[in-house]
Length: 352
Length: 191
Image: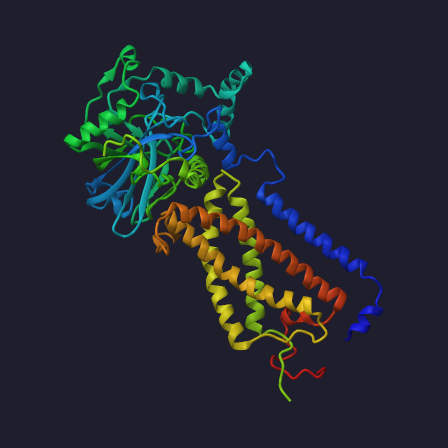
């Protein structure tokens, strides 16, 4: 074939239309998959915007549970968890932990007395190179049964329309119980007196292949000392930071890690529903916080406490939240890490 | 008289079409997974990691075959601009097929996120933990993914153009023909 043959042919309209149509179809499929054409898709970024304070996020900080302090320590496994899960972390031994105490909300300068919820993130690393990351809160159950409902709740709560919240709570009466807990639960003196719960369920897989649907809690060694509401308001804006720093400087603070095993038929997919209190529990070891480090230059700062980073021997369950949290935490991590310069690593007035 | 390839060898053609499916799936999974919060997210991101490493391995095999077996010559009447586009796009495709999985692996390393392929089997980090590096690699990974998709569209358009308009045998060099009637390395009677 030569060039002159080509020139003799008529304009290849059919061919060019075929090409344009196929390319447009492929491009359209890509845009649909990306969600660029669907404004209704609940994306991680929409979830983050729903969590933001009205004036927008605090740059460089986590989008929720923005105020926190780092700690390092160990998890002392007593070996009793090995029956439930083949994960190395349940073999008797001591494994290093990088954790973060925090309070809920998008404001990294929220006064501690105003905290409505407390949280704890931990990362346990085992010698086989595997990791277990978990982010827990002190609420006994979660606010909403599904990520979509949680998104609807956040929007209803932020809405200026007074009927929005009523509509939500009619459809989701469990939110009333949750808000009652947020408003009225006794505040303790310390993170070291706070019980933290996984809320979400996960699956433990044993060496024999048995599967157990579980939730877990960190139960403090110290008995809770409650602060009366009138006194709480007078506490220092950073009293929780100061308290834990002082306590850990004197001696390590401890929590027991207790695994709760679901019976068949328990609501494993819905973190708003508690399991009956008579379920079998296994105490698998002790978390020890041994050193407190401010977040700005602390080892927890750049860790994403993604609850789906799990060792072999723990997997996700039918609970839809860990996946949603993983997606939202990643978006939060990506955003704040890119904004690092807005959150200097050396804080002015840092006592160290 | 020298022999001349009129088609890529069968293993090269097989790899090309296998990788075409893998890479197109990879791009759709990648752009889709970052837009959802459903339980599919975990499945998609896991497939994205495993498929990414698979593409890296296949790309390295394919590059080796390309070096060993070479490629059929382009038609001598191909305009210079088309020839340049054809040759440079091959370099860019190879760079992206090998680079994208490495950037993805590297960005997870830089964010201290484990790369778990299956069960307890995980890949070691290939870069130090570094937030600035993570952000750079993440943005690069995203932009290069869009570039790769655009290149695939152009590549596809060019393939149809060569088949339907020029009918110059370029499509046939990589055509997914299963029955091998012509042997490779055969003398081309047209030349």
